[in-house]
Amino acid sequence: MSVTHSSSTQVSVWKKAILPWIVCFSASLFFAYELLQMHVMNAISPMLIRDLGLNATQFGYLSATYLFADVIFLLPAGILLDRFSVRKVILKALFLCILGTIGFCRAHSLETACICHFLSGIGNAFCFLSCMMLISRWFPKEKQAFIVGLMITMGMLGGVMAQLPFSLLAQKFDWRQALFIDGVIGIGIFALIFAFVKDAPKGFLSVDEKATELPFWEGVKRSVLNMQNVCCGLYTGFMNMPLMIISAVWGTLFLTQVHQLPLANASFIVSMICMGTIVGSPIYGWISDKLQRRRLPMFFGGVTSLAVMFIIMLIPHPSEFLLTVLFFSLGFLTSSQVIGYPAITESNPKELTGTSMGIAALIIMGMAAFIQPLSGKILDFSWDGTMLNGAPLYSLKDFMRAFMIFPIGFAIALIALTKIKESKCVIFAEESQAKA
Image (cartoon, rainbow, N blue to C red; front, side):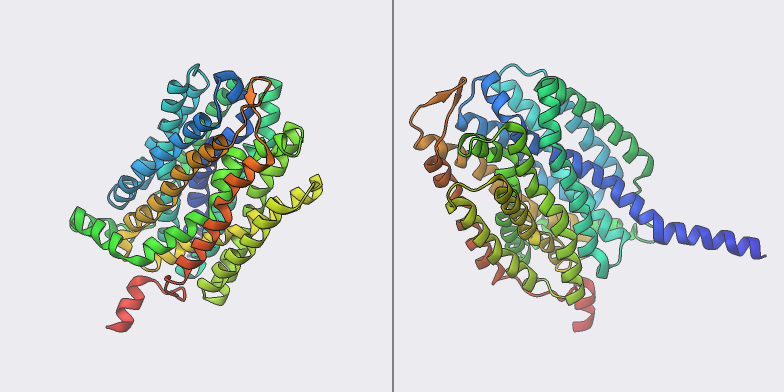
């Protein structure tokens, strides 16, 4: 009798305490892998620009194809995740990403590279939304902001690996062989997700049945008309710009050309944005859950990020140590964006979790897809035509014009924050029941 009781207790502990972590953090490897594909463009930018004969505008468009795919497939991703097996959707999306990564390493023209990078971007439309779906199913609401922070921390490890480690790998071999190794790593992650990710704990699948009963356009309409989704998307999108623009595209070029840093040193400093996000995301999530407030830490992150960005832009002749501290601080402070995601899930019915997150993510990634080529256009606008080792050489003035996007964006994020309602960590269904 006691043996049976002990066995059932162990099974209960496994299902309640251990299995949710294994499921969600196995899925987070997909998120980390997708961020590796996006940020690796920054690490290999000098080699890629020289090898394919690109200017800043062309390289901006190449980088943005990843985000264009993201924007196109985000809403379908949310709808599919509301209606079909999360595990199966993840595996299919990851397969496309691996295919795009291996294809990219064989590209010898801008057009081929764009197509392959677009394929990788399709996978990115599904990775974070699928993680959010799993968190909302496997963890209680009072832990979700903290878990989302940890999930983003795992994802940012992919961004960190895409900087100095990938730069060293590309220098030891070349960028093509480095990307092939990247594709092999993706196959390993595919195997882990296949083995460990499950859709939901028992008793939760009824939500999927309810979702299928809701008409397609009715779900989209309700998600679009919920201003909480729109404003949280705007706040998160603008606070996300250092990751999407500096860390993913121009950071290394800025530090090597303006501050004359070696490629490895520049990649390390740029990786501090991801490191700051790794540290800051769970801290912001924990503080928000502890205070049971969303807006206050989001306001703090917006104001302090604005200040740090001005220091990066205006301080003359900074040392490598100071740049390292500033880039880390920028990543840490902008990680207040993490709170926007639980604020969305708390403001929508469970059957529309994927669709509402898809609407917000459409705004977040759509802005990045627009701003990446725009920043390249701004760089080329005032460029004097100087070339160095077969690549365009941009001045401090060129970068400062392009980087004005960031303080303007942070200011808009703070304006959007004034329209976001304080959820007080209460989910939609509970709030509706309380009012009834």
